[in-house]
Image (cartoon, rainbow, N blue to C red; front, side, top):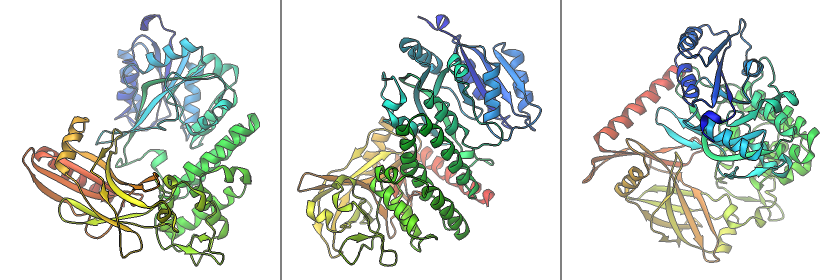
Length: 538
């Protein structure tokens, strides 16, 4: 079956004050070929040139239909509902005005839907960090290409994929179940729509093809809703959307409702906690709101969450205000989680959060070594090595017997890790283990080029600790001392290799590499652009 014989798709593009980007989004939908019978662009009463851009495109492309709203809805749900109402295709696909559909996305989704007679089909999506064009996979490993899920309750972890834009929907299925988005100013409307879809118990088919590119513009004058976290209102909206979604799913299936609440503890809560920042007013408001919501969770759902998420809940319940060491708590919420020293014990010898807040870390003694929130410090040891200190964690690592440590460099855009040679660990004066780990940045840059990383490469720097009992743990590095200094290194291959270590938002070590003069200039310009954007935001 070729594209011209496939059932047709209506692509619904929503836009508000996005004249500079909506043309690219619409063009990516039209470029899908004859499988897309129409592109319905809904202009949500924009006050810039969005209406003009869409009308000019419609004059050239007969498949583009423009719906102009006379009043702004205040959200994304109402214009998407308008698009569904105007659609005539057999399937519906959603697209935001600042994102794009990659070539072949509609074909891949429709072929999979038809093959498996599935009213909902899902494909791969990436978050593309601009302007660097780093692609970060969305929910990697959640979906298996070629898989068919007969009922969502058979795969309750599907509640973790809250996006509506990486899926193709049968229009008849949407009509039959009256599936629509929340109207008006409702942020995170896709949480509720996705819950309604799963509650309707469709068969879901999976394609391994990339079907959506989600553009992330952190330096934009007006960032997207998901990035606009300057006040607690964003978190309040997310909590309310999650509360509504959990209620919908619970009414359809207690299993799905429970999975939704566990997902909140393991994902949403941790994501916002690790970005809590230093503003005391924000911290207090966030803590109060989160504490009140988590108190409504059944105890069974809390117990079903991962250990570090359970400890966070215990701390929320133990104190009405954020603890003094709240930054330490943000590191526990990181991925991978890290529990920074000091390590305190309670009257019975059980591990507790701190002497000031003796909340027991229940279950730590039974965690597999690979799940321990181990902390590893790193400081410079010459120009081509780091000195590490592996902290013990209540004796758990000592029991396993650390033997070697090995640096790992993982492309932040996704891809295969580059591993350095393992080095033997030795007990040190800090009560843990130490080693000097060498690395070769020139070799790393070459490997990055082979993986398609060109002008600028970004790497997460981690360390794997292998133990005598056969267990191992992989974690990030905590930069210490003068490790974050930028260096320009001579290179026989590139002439110059600019290396810029930096600390991520989660406090972990990462590295930018720019091979050659062009790459070094690109990195410097990018740094200046970020600095200007930061000053503009202030």
